[in-house]
Image (spheres, rainbow, N blue to C red):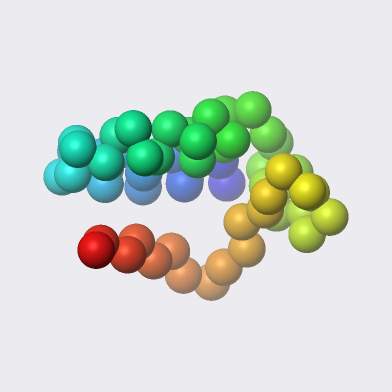
Length: 58
C-alpha cells in the first residue's frame, strides 16, 4: 500500500511541484512505516484508511 500511495503523491507532485515541502511529512511517514502500520487505527503516528484518495487543492 505504501508504494501505491507514494506513487500517487509523486504523480501529484509532478503536476504541483510547489507542494513538495508540504508533502514531505507524508512521504517520510510512508517510507518509515509498513503497509500494516499505516492502516492500523491504533498507530498513534497516524494511519491511512479510505476507499478513495482525495487531494484538496486550496
